[in-house]
Length: 110
Image (cartoon, rainbow, N blue to C red; front, side, top):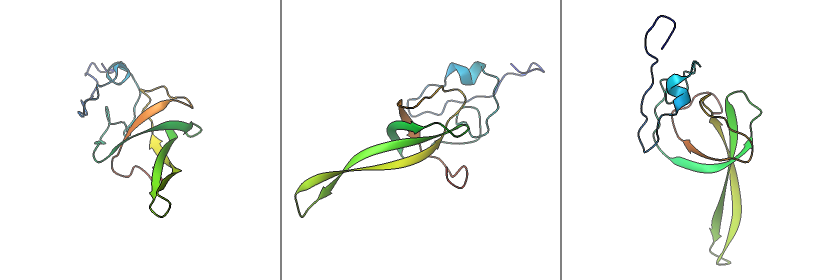
């Protein structure tokens, strides 16, 4: 409930994800939060390990995957770093396994 008595806006993003309590009862303002802002999750849902949390409300997620080389009939390890926005509803630290949902471009790099 806000200062003027109106209830806080939040929404269910679907896809089997519950709205966190911090988004429902919190006081933060984040327009890029999928639970309280105007961003919708669509496209791919990716899993990875948090590599860096040095940016404000943003993280770098490392995804490891295998790439098949037909000539040698073997796999090689590869990785990609994905910048992602973090809602203040979540407390994330380096080394955590996170699930990231794709949305429209939020900035030049994220």
